[in-house]
Image (cartoon, rainbow over all chains, first blue to last red; front, side, top):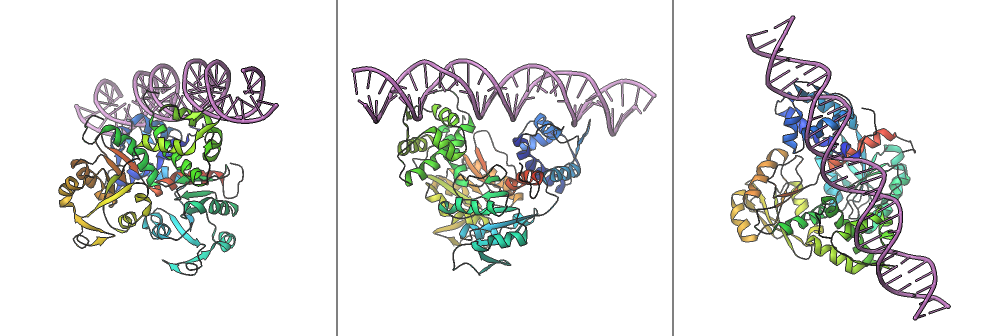
Length: 214
Length: 214
DNA sequence: ACGCGATTGTTAATCCTATCACAATCGCAC
DNA sequence: GTGCGATTGTGATAGGATTAACAATCGCGT
């Protein structure tokens, strides 16, 4: 239970929590690792092993209490509190992110918007004013920004990352189509649908247009 | 060179190709695995091993020809042709995806839009008309859809996936916050920034607000 | 109260991935 | 033309992650 926890395991926890939430909404009170595994397309052994890194959550002969396990996983992940985010870049993409309701409903609150375009600075999106990047340090101090969302073009990505890191942001959600470089204490998650598609095509190409054999 | 190719390797190729494109744009003609590795934060051995699954692309003592390697990787991935996509769900998210210019510039063309809301059917977005899901089979036959983009709410996700699979789509880009289930010959890539954030918070929580030691 | 089917938590074994390390070979300088 | 620093491609090794398997134990029915 108290060994080093592999990152792959941590990455799977939100998937488990999400599925448990859906089960809960459907009124399912208890679920076994076998059934949850079927639902998610993973082996029951993996689910049990993953959870075992953090404690014992199930009952032998019965399974897991859905509501309880969901709550525990969310606590482990730090989802029992609010996380404050700033979006840098309010072009088409940045605005779409700013008005995406899925973040707030999961406790991720956008508390500041930045851009370097004078035409955009001072405008409002939702109930937030777009600030200049020059104000980043000041705003970061006032607003306690946990996570920075990078939504600028590729050629400005690294520069923006460096500025966010400089003001103490330790989590980054990177939408720019580049590999960003950060010091070891900063965590990065990349969101790039194009890259996702570009590895998928390898398999689409190799299984042919109408070849049912994978 | 002609063994089974691990999926992790295929998933890294787009990253390599992207970096090579940026190097090319900056006028770099040749790069070593060491330098490319530095740029991407991976070991040079990994780059060489990954490439070795597909052939020999470098010159000893020199490195890799940037333009040539990029072209080869893109060919391996099937990026030397156009891929045709349909978006299902033209709510806020679907519309943002439809008008995202990053797909077309990489050879991923959106050729059809679907929704089940009568108020949206018949409206145009960009130069495409929103069709009813009832027309899916007909449009799929006419337009040769390679990839389906799922941009509907969670509770309709699986249903939409099943319909897309039924008309012969073998690649799915899933934006719905659910784990979808598909037959083995269908490839799925999930895009879910919330899930990405939810595993990041585990580490943010554990390294504390101002703790420089990771 | 007892036995039984079900299911967990965990150890051991298998499988897969990343790294190391070096022979082969390239281009360049002299 | 020869020697040397650089760099590749790859076989061997080490390191992780997944799966298999089973003892421990739970709740239920009788």
